[in-house]
Every structure is written in C-alpha cells, then in structure tokens.
Length: 121
Image (cartoon, rainbow, N blue to C red):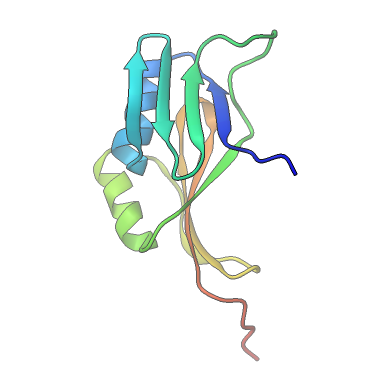
C-alpha cells in the first residue's frame, strides 16, 4: 500500500511560511533557504517552495491537522506568536477537541487531540 510521507506546499514567501510552522505550530525546521524549506511534521515531511514541477497556484483550501497533547496550551502558544485564531476550541462530531488557526497562503491549521466519541444523552 502507498504511504504518504511528504507534503509540498507551494507558497509565495518561503521564509515566512517556514517561520510560521516553526514558531506558531512548533515544528522542527530541518533546512531553510530563500526558495525552499523542509520541516519535520512528526512522521510527514512538509516542504515549502514557491515553485512546482508543474504549473500550479499557491496553496489554498488545505487543512493541516496537527495532533497536540493540550489544545488550549497549543492555541495559547500560537496566539503568543501572533496567529490569527479562526475558531476557539470546540469538540467535533467525531471526537476531537480542535482549535483552528490561519496559516500561510490560506492554509488552515487544526490543533487537535482525540477526546472520545461518546455521545451524551
């Protein structure tokens, strides 16, 4: 079976996007230069580049889900780094506590943790 291990986001400003994922989300920056960066996404590599191997537009309409231990603490860290909060913590129908912040190039970042799927009557 194929295994997804890398996501390449086409962005206009690589240094700004790399700083966002490093400072706001807390990912480890493996490599960075003006036109390319690579981050450790915890099992998935995130590459940032303004160029693609085929014609394309910058990233938009993408939601990246990052599992965290404490949603409130992760959201506070993101806020302290100037992140725009799109939605404060809430519980999804599928049993996640999530908070959504705006990422670079219209990417949405979901900071979540599983909390169970029990339905209260």
